[in-house]
Image (cartoon, rainbow, N blue to C red; front, side, top):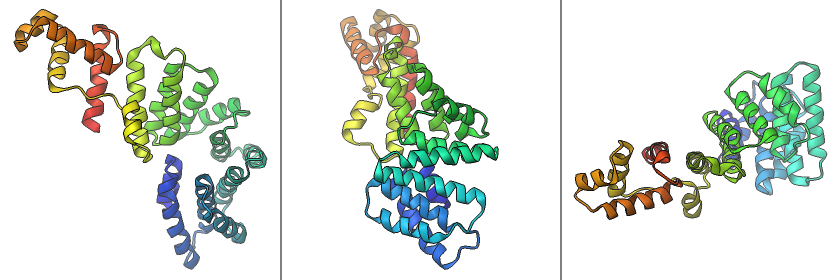
Length: 293
């Protein structure tokens, strides 16, 4: 079940569901830690998000559970279940229940449970508690919570650089679904053109997250991954980064200056930059993406 919980947190609901289903069957036979309810709620949430008919079975499992668990587990389970209801019904009642869960947690100074409910509500498109989400995330310990705080601030204030920073922190915290959203917002931000390197980093990050989430198709790869340069193009780029002029590069590689200029122009286009002053950063990003791909 733990693997299923991690997959949910990473946004990998497709991977989570079979893990949680197997966990439920095992917990039917033996559940000394009273984890059945949380497992059923997460399975319901994952199935509802995917629009699968199994959601009704997991709903029944959760209802039959009877809340026999610790407060921490029960509170997490209730929020997952309420989020699942909103995914199924889309009538606002699930979001309202999540707000109530957050209020209940706040009364107990349970910041993690409060953030859990608010994060699920935000994931459903609710931004009515964005200020509170930012404050709660900032007050909660851990890499995941701090990445959420950065994401909340980016949503609140906007700006390509903020979205990119949030994407990087969320990716480091393995919250790939939210990281992908942040990178996408960075690429769509009106000020994204202020630095071409930002767009290259965001595209590479988005491609990595899509791959983690199992959403990497040929089309998305063409749109998201930093394009690969040919060996000759890399030879020219590396010499240009070292400070050689077009003439010096031509003499080193025994080609014409016009050929060098043509290759550099294509490299600028592939890397999404406009000139040599941006080449070093964009080349480093492209090399990093190709070495980890």
